[in-house]
Length: 153
Ligand code: 4NP
Figure 1 (cartoon, rainbow, N blue to C red):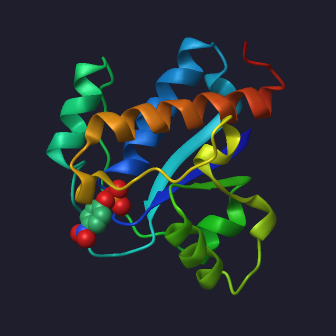
Figure 2: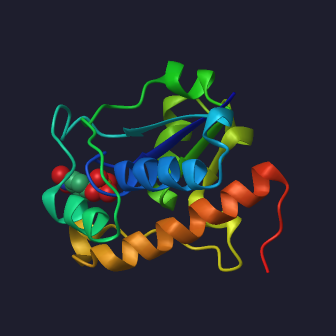
């Protein structure tokens, strides 16, 4: 099993979107048995809260169902994971601070697996949930190709 933890700030928008998008993607490709998939936030501000309704709405509009309860990332989560996929540079900094700089070789920005490496802009501030959805799909597809050794056209 490949253990993947998606990480954002609050764990109510981008990382639960990534968790649910990636769960559907691996199921659609018939490789869901290869992965253990979860998501966490570097902040505890939203702990216990469900997926933010506008994020859940965008997922539903794209045929993706599922729920998640916001949970803060721990050092143990990072130690136990094979891949920690963060949404932006701030998350990357916060994860490495949590681990005291350990495990840097398994922490990646999600969109570093695309042809256009970038941050997934936080829709909490941009209010652009469609753009976040598109960036996360691109990153998840690139990451899945990376770990399965596939190549995209
Ligand atoms: P997320 O978005 O990191 O994509 O879950 C945010 C959610 C909540 C806050 C910031 C970003 N907040 O400041 O409460």
